[in-house]
Structures are given as structure tokens and as C-alpha cells.
Image (cartoon, rainbow, N blue to C red):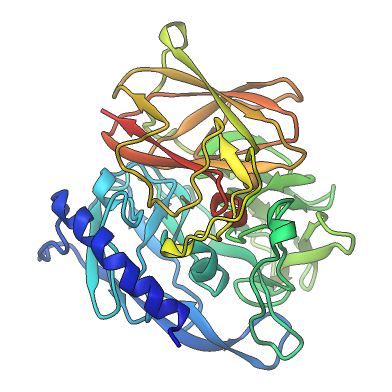
Length: 463
Ligand code: C2O
Ligand code: CU
């Protein structure tokens, strides 16, 4: 009997070789000046959420919860992926504008990194803010088993918080024995997706973080779950404001039933209460039994800071599209024409085609015919995409390597946020604008991974 992994590895060699032929270096040399961060993909055991049983066979980028990486805007980052898993993997830097061969999409932008191999990622982050990283190879399995970490790209000038807390929000799909169960149920894949069973924040259950009374805390929320759309709220009287969405600064607003889908981030400035022991909680209301995803507890004597001391964050240098000269491109998200089973074990396709973009079904993880982009875009030209949702489900639509601005919707008031992932509601038509600035093949997909893996994926070529 062959294990699924053996088959996977065996069938991939041909395709890996094809990608090498496209001239992407397997590893580049170390630059002495840049300190290197090692990401060691490995199996670990860990007690997740409220469990006191260790969950075995988790996947991680380190010996515990995947580390939060700090980068400096404008300074080269050097990360080395070392693969100690028995299956190929990669790292995708979600939300970054970077060279195409650093984007981490197996087969499309780089060869698979096999067991025992390594790959060096080097790029300069251009935009400050909150981002994350995850594999882009057999992604439903690898993310579900634990491989998601956060990235903080520091602003040039310190905005002046007393504390900065990354909050990695996600569920794990565990049985009563604390071990992983089947990651998806096809009938749910064809709907909103299959939910996890253990809710976690930084892999813990409803953690409380202590902070100096009266101080200013920056909470960086990041939804790394593969399915769940959160709806997050702070109490009305909390002294707090959202200051950035999906990495980019926004006009401040209160955190109130704010919907965040897989892949999305929000930075919240919180002024800790003055009275020692007082707690402020962020609560998720997207389920019938709401829960506190995180609590901040005041300790010590109040330092009496004021939220107004935090000024507006500086804008990121995202290329601004010219709306008067933009080309209009509709992007329709729909169910696939036939809901057929397609046997396809390549790097994590689920073997079903349920979903489509502009009627094209591409169920594989970057492994399609590289000669067939869904659109060819010109570098430095402006575009208006219309995301048209023809389904009764919400889809977080993510574009690699480009930052787009939300323009309007036929269903609601929208703010002109810059983002890489937009939540598109059932029957919504949302217009967004962008100006691609880097050549290459860039994915567009739903970040509900079961949707991505059963058809709602395509790529665009910028030339
Ligand atoms: Cu966060 Cu294509 O990924
Ligand atoms: Cu979707």
C-alpha cells in the first residue's frame, strides 16, 4: 500500500523539474549583512486551546507556536525555509508586494521544497503593518495542522504604544481525544466550508494579557483560520479604535461587529482602564455562543496616557491607480457548472470542483497550465475589478502581490481601504482599483481554503 504522501511526492517530481527549468534558483547565497530567520517546518505536539491533551502530528515552523516575525520597512528580509516534513512545502508572505519568485506558490512561482531541502526568501518589505505567512502547497492540510504565523513590519517612526500584542485567531479540527479529525466534509466544502472544533487565540483558549493600567496597547488581530469569518466587538465604553485594516492605515473607527474573514487583519489601539484588575475583552459574535477571543487586564498604577497621543499612521507607498484611465475587468465568483469529482492529488487539490472564477475551475494549488492566466495585466496600468459574487456565501477574495483599494459596493457603504483581501458578501458587486507594479504570475483566490482548493482559484499575469 502506498501512503497518500508517497503518491504525492512521486507524482510531483516531473512538475518540480519543470519549474526549475523556468530559471528560479533553488537557493541563493547568504548575504552576510542580513541576519537570517530560519523557518524549520516540522511536526510537533502541543496542548491546544482548552485541551489538556497534547495534539500530535501538528505542523509548525518552529518548536512551538509559529513565531511572530518582525521586519523593518525598506530593509531586506532574509528567511530560510528548512523542510523537515515528509511532504513538500513553501512559504507565502500574505499581503506583501515582492518579486514574483519570492511569493511562495508551489509550481507557479517556485519549485516545491521537498523534505530535507531548503529555500531562501529575500525581499524588501515596502509597506508597514500587520501581515502573516503560511505555506502555499497542500495548504488546507498544512494550515489546518498549524502552519500560520504573523508578521509585523515596523513603521519608520515608532507610533508610541507601550505594548504590541499579535493575536493569531484560528480554530483546529480536533476530536474528543484531542487529535485531528478529517479536515473537511465535501457537502460543507460546497457551502460555507467546514469549521474547526477548538477555538484558539495564539493557540490558547480566551487568553488574558496583562498591561499597565492607563497605558496604550496595540492589538494586532489576524484571522489565520481556514474557514471562519469572525465578527469582533469591543464594549461600547471601551477606549479603543481600529487604526489599520489588512496592514494599511485607515480612518479610525470603533471595533463593533467588525467582520474579518480568513487572511484579514485589523490593528486596534486600546487604552487600558485606570483601575487595576479591570478587564477589556474583544468578543466574537459570529457564532451562536459568542466567546472572548482576548482579554486585556489592567495592572499596577495608571500611567494616564491618552489615546490621542497616537497620531495617524503614515500611509504606505502603494501605487495609486488612475481611475480616469482604468480598464474595467469583471471577476465572477460562482459555483462550478458541474459539481463533478475530479481525482487530482496534486499538492492538495481536494478532488472536487465546486467553485469557479469567471467560470474557470482551477482546483489545484498553483498547479495548472502556467500558460493560461485568467487575465494578462500590464505593469503600471490602472484597473478596476468588479468582484461579482453569484453565490449565497461570503468569500474573502485575496490577490497576491498587489494592494487594491475598495471603491464601491451595490450592497453597502464601503470605506476606501487599501487591502489584499476583501470580504465579498452574497450577491454583492464590489469594485476595487489597483495598479500592478511587479511582473509575474499572481494568484487570485478565495481564502476559505476549501473553496480555493475546489475551484475558486486562478492566476493573473502581469507583464
Ligand atoms: Cu494567504 Cu494565496 O494566500
Ligand atoms: Cu469562498
